Length: 120
Image 1 (cartoon, rainbow, N blue to C red):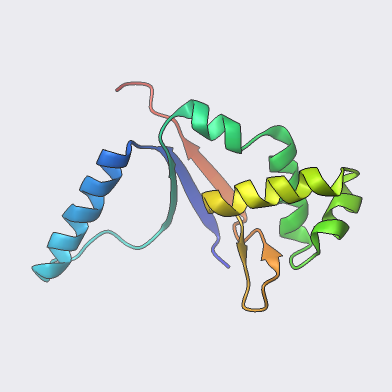
Image 2 (image 1 turned 180 degrees about the vertical axis):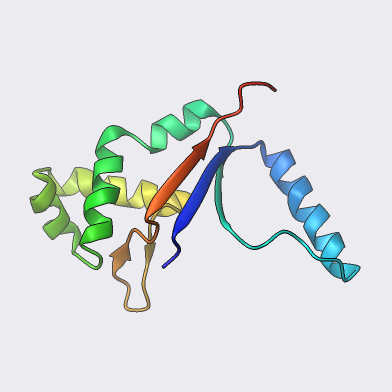
């Protein structure tokens, strides 16, 4: 399991420019920054639509109860199965949760660090 994921705000163009820069450096045999788990959103608004209070709570419970079923997670959270299932789908699509080799849902990070730029 990864220890930490950094969440930030970056436009699609900025992200692709970073990928291109690293790719070219690798092609030239130059070192690139150490691999790290980074998850980007295009805006603070997009981030706040994904990481809600309920989903943050879901991540915490899932981290401690790795591999639990969605139904079991819904019971632990005292929430409706359908809503928890939708939250799992959104968190998985955003890269905040994943599935292990057996297909079980896990929250692999012990810590999420959110970087919000104050200047453009």
